[in-house]
Amino acid sequence: MEKMVQSEVFFGGNSFVVSTEESGVPQKNGYLFKSRQIEVEHLMEDPEFYRHGWNSWSPTGWRKLSQKPLKIYDNPLRLLTADDAEHFEKGKHSGSYVAALTDSNGNCLLLGSLSVSSGFIIANNSHLNGFQNDLNSEWYIGYGNEREVFKEYANLLTEKFGINNLKAGNVWSSWYTFFEDINSRDLKLTIDLLESMEIDVIQIDDGWQLNVGDWSANKKFPEGMNEIATYIKSKGKKAGLWVAPLICLPESEVVKNHPDWILRDEKGEAVTAGYNWGTTYYTFDTTLPEVQKHIFEIFTKFKDWGFEYFKLDFMYAGALPGYRSTKIDREVAYRNILKVIRSAVGDEIYLLGSGVPMLPSIGIFNGVRVGPDTAPYWDNTERKNDPSGPGAWNAICNSLSRFWMKGIYETDPDAVFFRSRQNLLDDNSKHLLQATAQILEFKSFSDPIDWLDENEYTELINFLNSSNKINQLNRYIFEVDGVTIDFNDIIFPKKRISDFILVK
Ligand code: 9PG
Image (cartoon, rainbow, N blue to C red):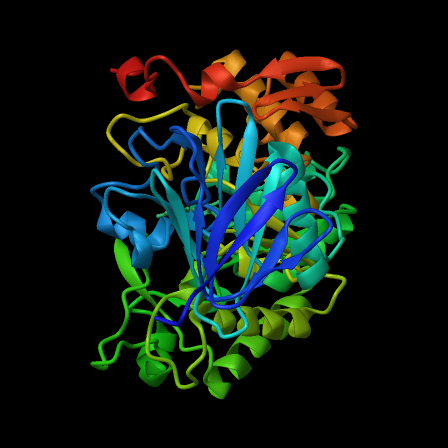
């Protein structure tokens, strides 16, 4: 451990003792420290702890230090996919990049990373302890009104990493109705009905590719992806495509042809990068020039097909621990491959990140998913202790807890629903999801128009046309066009409501 120096930071009449490698530099509001490690003494009486999850899907929200820490429990493969498994920190309150403590008077102490350096933070009853890897690691400490402190941190992040201001507009995605069961003929029928509507992007999700890793059209798209992109554009919409460019399934051609591209551990074993599609999968060593060339080429191809919007999924895999050909921090490796993707598509193409590590994605992605998948149901008791699992409730809790990120990139809380067909969500739940999308100012849905009755159709039209005035009154209380919505009873329910029970 480096030699640590102790100093004191002052905020009005309050002060905190801080231990770091170098002493701090006061800012307009708060202090900056060049240090990998940092320890801040907080002396707060059972404050609420803000747990910020590593990637888009990772549990994010507030818990008292005396409560059970917010995390994914008892599911190692899920943990590997939907959070930073490297830093599970059993029994402790911990999170990635930024943490905050708010006391009973509403005063908030924030500790946040300002570097691409795999930052994480652990809290206990007396201290916040931050850890980063890089020699240039920086930490910010702020104290005061919760919303103002988070705003200041968000400003510092965009000052340092930039912002890419393209807007997505209204998005229709194929996922939350058809899932992988898509083909060009059925999609075109669905697309025809979207033509006259206020929709900017029609995005084809998972199900078009030969395999995860083999990014060519499968036989459900016999005329190729160029043809469907052209069809979407002929309806006056931007064509969007889902890709998971940094992962590959074990049986994919890319793994068979290039076993040397796969990220391995020190012993030479392929790193398990996560679990989905009923299988574990791999990721690449993106520091290899051949892998960078491959990624550049597939994106050049997608762009040549005519797509102008990409949903880049399972991106966290590029920032997993492993033995890389160049010895750099895993998140630096991730950011470098993002730059390769951006350079292949140019600045006019919208990049939406899903399953992305949140900090090293700033300034490159235009939009980022800020919660787990929604679903046409509220919650599911089959899946205990998993705040990252699909469902409306998990998506709302996580996304609203990341409201402060709105100034950093567009914040996508995931699709909302209007249909009652094939849907367990009641009207109230659908409205809460819709309000969340209005609050986060990212509107997407997956309903096929011919599934909607007249009222549902009218609701959809109103939603798409609404230009919402949003005002955050309190952590989880918002004003949407003058109507106050209090989410507190939703975020912290008295008892669990499960659709699994409802359908039994
Ligand atoms: C396509 C889907 C949709 C969806 C994405 C993503 O943690 N997990 O195991 C996990 C698996 C899948 C998943 C999210 C999390 O869904 O979020 O919108 O594009 O892939 O397969």
